[in-house]
Length: 220
Ligand code: CA
Image (cartoon, rainbow, N blue to C red; front, top):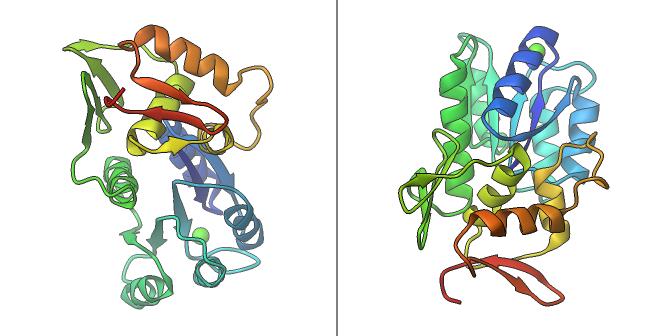
């Protein structure tokens, strides 16, 4: 899962990015509205955290432009205290949720999980596929009662497949959703991660669909 964090206040941006990375997301950041708009328009994100007070282009305008261009990723806006009018315009502009500053990081992460879960049509934070259970609240994957030891890339890849289980997911889609923008993608290819995951998972859980990609399912 890959997210974009748009926040112009450096300390808060750093805290947000760090917490999100610790929670298992690939994280890109933007510090102004123009960069944010470009990144959201051209990259694939599973969710966006968008501060509304931004230099160069305000958050509401960024959001309106994304929605007008057909970008449907879930967006959580950060609003100023007492900014009820901001919440109203934000939601009208296409925001899916909001948080008022200051907020607790735990709450932000919970709201992000909720947005990503609902975008995938899942009702619970615990996703199950045959013997595999993933709990998004604590970033754990369990097979038959045993917790798996996964690297951050393996976890992200498996989480993405899990949110899209029973669907064929292409290699390029996986690349888009497991790496941050500045990551050197050549050294660790999707094929390598898939091979490593397969060694840790029950046989047949990740199927290769020739020429199309991969599918996580129990119906093999
Ligand atoms: Ca701001």
